[in-house]
Amino acid sequence: VQLQASGGGLVQNGGSLSLSCAASGRTFSNYNMGWFRQAPGKEREFVAAISWNRGSTYYADSVKGRFTISRDNVKNTMLLQMNSLKPEDTAVYYCAASGSAFGPTSPRREMYAYWGQGTQVTVSS
Picture 1: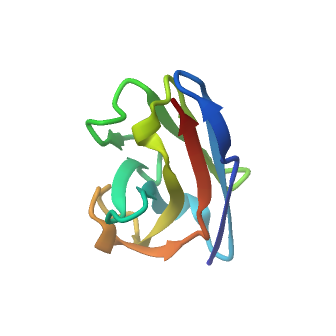
Picture 2 (picture 1 turned 120 degrees about the horizontal axis):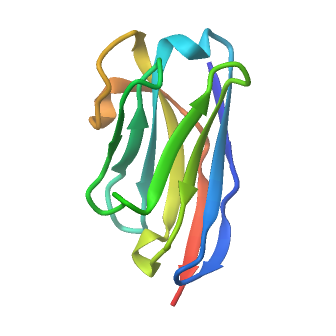
């Protein structure tokens, strides 16, 4: 499976960005999807996840109320709408797909077997 993340860029404090992840190579609609991010010198951390049937979503406390995850199982894409961005949101953002079909949605990195190449998000203060 291939994942291609896009949409990153430079934005001012309080601004908005929308990230997109395009998937190919398997039945996208059967798998949970997630966004993670990694800032310089820090470990990769969970941002948001969405279940295979869009029935549930999960967010890290740090982004709850500001970010919205969604997916289109017809277009095989996943989106992350990021509003009220802060300088501490600066990181490389990665999209990921779970390793098993129809499983429970999880914020745990080890539950995701497939990763995109990452897209840089920089929020200036």
